[in-house]
Length: 82
Image 1: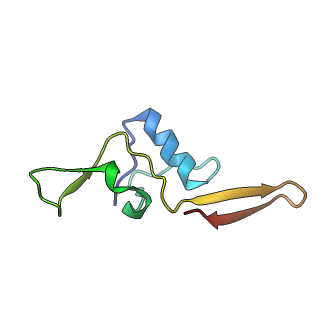
Image 2: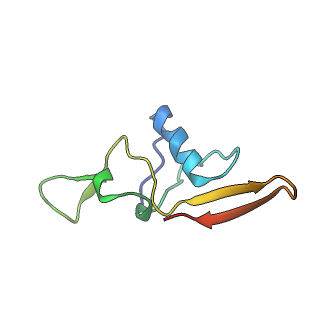
Image 3: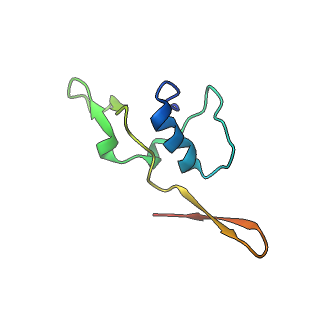
């Protein structure tokens, strides 16, 4: 599973936003599953399909939770987006 890109302050903000959590700061071991990335977000080294590496500018976009706020009841509802 890809680790949060702590050294890239521009990209990490997109990753945090993609989690749908407000005011959440990822801990040092935090990961996002590879199912949240497309095949184009990875590159291979030495033509080995088993070893793929996440591109430094990749942002999780697949199967993420969309948070919807209903103003009357102030409820949060998580919905899977595909």
